[in-house]
Length: 521
Image 1 (cartoon, rainbow, N blue to C red):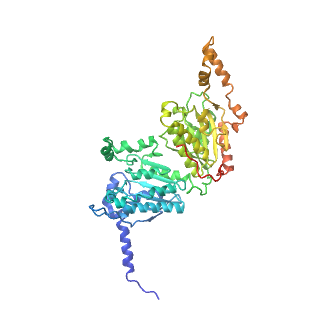
Image 2 (spheres, rainbow, N blue to C red):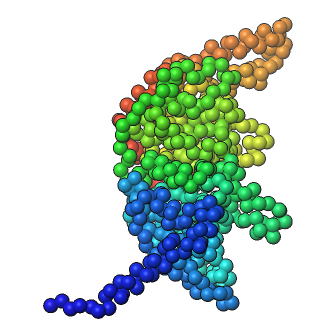
């Protein structure tokens, strides 16, 4: 026999009232101020990211006790909205900092909610997305040694997640201090212009500590940090940020060893018709390598990362034959494609991300070598270039290497040219020039005495250059089997599609049982 519980309706109403109290509707004045700043609320951002499928946890959590001497805290959700969101049908954990609650500052309960997000991402094998707006230590709680001494396990948790699931940070407000540290642990970081920043210390703290009179925008603005390579993308508005997050995730499995993204329908890019005409035979003439990439990949699938940083190398996600892959390409229109420290770091990090999530790599080589002299040596180019070769060397995904034009010396090796990394496909185009250094430079270094002592130095120099240039030919590279074949650009896409359908997703480690390799950096 069932009995009526007279307290039931009141208890349900009490719970509903608790949820209503933390909703945007219940805090109309604070929401209006957020909108006046040109920003969405935390809950509106989650809705824009994943639509209506959001399953919140921790919505009724409250702040910890304020430090002695501080006013008691009122902090709905403790300043961060957390839960599971579905993006294009796939689940992800999201944590959206709420600037309307104590400036989005990090309290003890909010940090516990973030740890719960990390736990769910680890156990459920789903991406973690952090939408940053404000944050940093909450001073009302932090000025207490008893509370501060344990530190935080969150960086440890993010370390556990790194290389396991995609980690994403979107900077949509002040992002100094702890939010910047958290974002730095992520694979993909973007910032919204005018409203988002990222940096270790805000302008007031910098001025107090160093005397520098800077604005937050000068320290950590979107375009400033995009140019430095701190973030992967600077976008114009919040909707563009959410679109970029969805696009980024569309190339990746939900976790590192998950099922790869299956090949979908695709169209041939219009640039494919011009591929055979894109590469100038004149080594001094530049061209935009992105046109080449677009000719090789499916139509409208090129998604460039860090486009404003280290422009002498292009890193991009693409699809070829419907399959996602990563591209690293020297960019001849910037520094002639030569490698400096920034380009090596940019490319190395991108290779690591692609290898983590099982994306095959396409390497396009056209470079005169490394940046030499003081600019290279002062920036540890010796080690940073080695890190690029290291990342390509330890990568387990299929790697396809194409020499499109210039390929000189050690830089050719660092980029994985020829047999350097046991590439699954190693090709050269008819415009390829593979040798130790440019012929003219070699003659001037080694044979200067020869031609300067000749009756006609200029003629003798030209003779020497012609003699050695006859030995530099892509057909000779193929003759010595240093590459698999010399092919036309227009034939390359078909070879890539065939290889992508054939090669294994992962290759076995070359040294079984080895715990780890030590990075040069």
